[in-house]
Image (cartoon, rainbow, N blue to C red; front, side):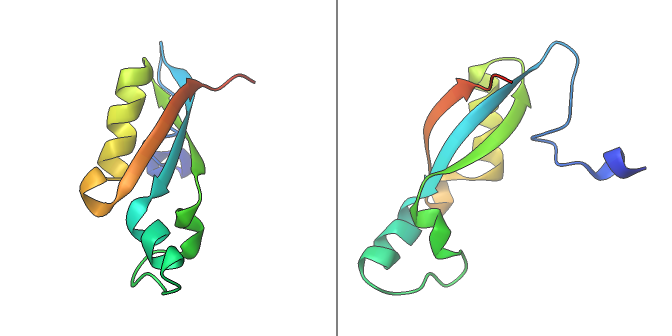
Length: 85
C-alpha cells in the first residue's frame, strides 16, 4: 500500500497535529560562505528549509525532526510552529 512507506514525519496519527519545522545546515552554510561545495548536501541547505512534522506537541515534533536531521551532522532547528491549514 502507498501509505505503508510514507515518511514517518508526515504520517497521520490520532491525537496529533501538524507542525512546521524550520531547519538549515550550518556546515553547508559555512561551505557556501567559503565559496566551496558541500561534499554531500545541496547548497539549498545553507538557507532555512521548512519541513512538516505530525506530532503530539512541539517538543515531540522537534525530537522527531532532530532524529531525521541530526544536530551532530550540522542541522540546526530554528523554530517549530503549529502548521495551520
